[in-house]
Image (cartoon, rainbow, N blue to C red; front, side, top):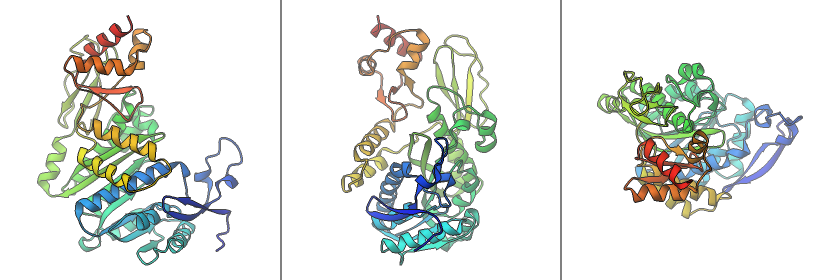
Length: 399
């Protein structure tokens, strides 16, 4: 079939799909081909789609029933086609895109993979599509919002389109606001203030989750984060929604702030939606910086991460090794304290050579503290040890 623009057929997971030939849209090195093509397709998000397949399968197994799946911003339909082919127990997949070419190519890709009978493609505004499915018997068990930029414009309608116990997957690629480069933009979009700390990507996940919490609460819906990750240029959050004023109140009560001292690395969590009154670091007396309001609690569920690992064992992916590493790290840090330290950042501040990270963790464990690696940063680790103990150990190991 002719689409009026250059295309090629590629393989990903268990499917083959027709996608725009991106080489035709890259005229100079600075060009970002996926956004210039008439239909959006980003090959670098394959890992994102792999994890989405694993998360959806884990969720379907947890629900123990056939599920309805929706992707309101489907692009070329590659994610939706993979859901239909690779995930057991998917009854219907609803794909939508405002671009007619996207709807056309998504339909072709569904037919190409023999799943046209369970895939329904529409050509609507994303919020209109989701709102049409907000009625009780039209809702979804899983909604995947994967935009080019912030997911905030689609969150309200996505929440309303989910059944009780449904899973919402959100991608945010606007890392500059979330990581504190554009603070006002973050406050405007996500309702929280960011900080440019060594753990800014974790704060980004917490700000996105906090925004989701407050938006869901308006509809008397509570949230429970099952999985999240930060890779390359984006963050991703998977959260289950639960109906009821009580669970919504419980979610709001988990909101809070993270206080950070840029002078001595001290950090602490302040509970409650009301801004903390503490402004002075209890360790060194310097001014404390505040991030939030945000979600300071758990940003991954250990059991859900294990279920994703088990699903990975049954499959063969191109980036299997990387997937295993991410899942193992996320599972391991799921119950560790909020925020992490980065050995190189501490050494930069103290003007010290960087010691082996393993030795730092071993020393912390020897002294009775929890110490685990984090997927957010290859030089990062989580610990319940105070900042002065961490600095002392790093200093001793470089002496």
